[in-house]
Image (cartoon, rainbow, N blue to C red; front, side, top):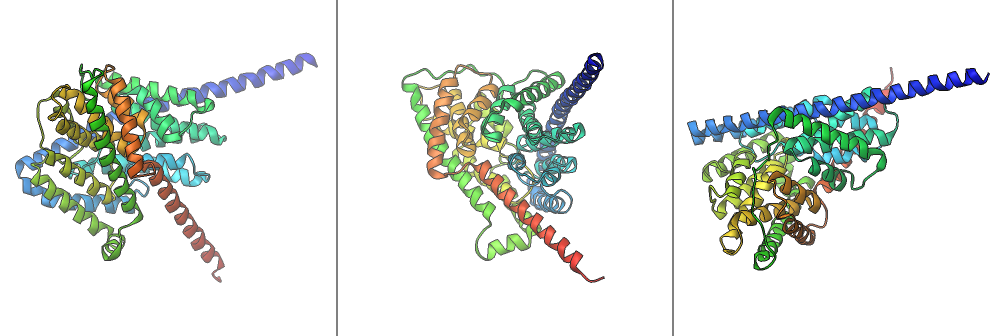
Length: 453
């Protein structure tokens, strides 16, 4: 009897270990796929930006047709075929970590929605929208890991959410080639906590997706390598200037987007609700006009402009900040899929470039980095994430202390302007909208059942 019980125990242990290994291998495969998709998405986004520049070079006024038509088409496709793909993608990922009804989570993180996110973000970049691919990559990564979680047959809610969290973090890691930033982003922005049960999955996802991206495109840095420093002393005036200015402008940006997410007031607000496609076309027309005025500088992610400002190859006027700021707000309000990370970094770089001319005792490149981290933190209100992302993107640890001080100062200033985190508040609104949709669907189903045969 004892021998039989031992054999039974060994068999059960073997089955358990086999199941655990199968799930681990599937998790590794999922993380690698996230890296592959992130690299492919980056390639598509780059080609879309090039196509936009070719159109603009052929004739700048062609964007008066391309931008309105493209944004209208993107909005129609989003509302018709890819519901849940609108906006950044980070609020959707945050929302799925708190929604109890996993049938709703399955719909938000469907692979079809992820595909729509990639295609429509690419379309938005062709049309000159001021959007980025990094936020959408978070939702795409979460969708891929969630699909594999369903394949594994996870029944535990914590395990399911751990896979979603790992997917979002892996998306950031692969999109920016910043593994540490992916981990910090998962802790600070997505989950707001660190759970031992999900930490291993998150770390594995970040590492494997990052390694996959490096294997495909090399160990690059997003904005190249910088060697600038901000020595303690008079140079830290830049910390105060950038922290205050970045916090104010970033907080105001977040407040405007939150207000816009509630709906615009009056007759214009009714027009946007009743005619969303026409409103998107109007937004496209405004983007084209701003793009023509700025000489095409406001089209796309703003990556090239930010890199040029950092290395000192070009000096954009203060008007670039205003135009890019407005273009990003209009792009978000149009309702098309697209992220805020890259445009925010571009706007922050322009702030730093403008401040640098008044601070001759501080290296201009360093001030640009401080402006970038200040504005980015002012928008997302995640100081650690902002610091680590900028530090890794520029491969510069010498300015870490100054970046951290600027980021926390900007965070405090931004909180005075906008008391809630942008992504968390947008996630709350997204969850409310999903709940209303579910209630409406249940009511329609109830009416159908009550109809006499």
